[in-house]
Image 1 (tube, helix red, strand yellow):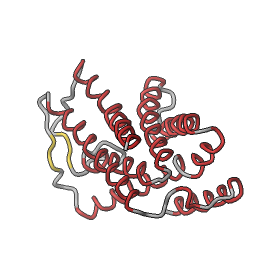
Image 2 (cartoon, helix red, strand yellow):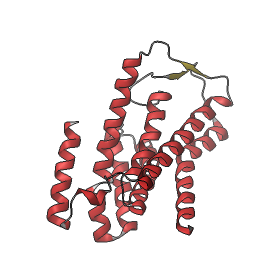
Image 3 (cartoon, rainbow, N blue to C red):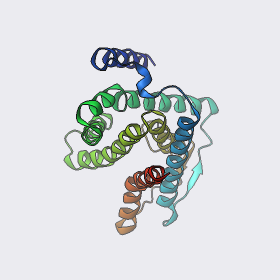
Image 4 (tube, rainbow, N blue to C red):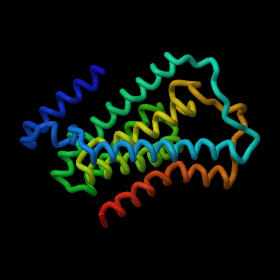
Length: 225
């Protein structure tokens, strides 16, 4: 939490002395439109993430089972960890720095830079250095996700939509389906059987592209209304 407070202070200083603005340009103040953006992002991300994980067991001899050893307090602590990590990353990659980059270089270049930084950042998160293949996969997955989040910030001029998308995905990916650094959470796979071949590739591509494509369609619909 201290890290988030420090980010807010640094963000305020950057905006004040470089752009002569304050934190309001990051769209913190809630209003009905921003709350709809947050809810839409959260629900879409949660739905796509859930569908992805369900598909990973639907075509093989495997299933999801409830982790009966997980306590309610442990689940709350894990969820709080996810919330803090999402807020930290959003302020770092879709906050003042992205706003300033958009002002200087325009939306496309700024969002590409933000996405690239987001991908590189996850090399450290996953400790992937020394494995070029793993580094490439991580950069591709998180870079595309970061691009979607950056564009969401740029088009809505607010952190609500990218935060909703990011939180919806991470909560369901890490807490509901136990796919992350916190180990077994609410549901876990019954055995080690996993998909292989073409089905595995197709579901992998679904994981990467489904949500960004949905958001592309969302913005297309909004631009016509």
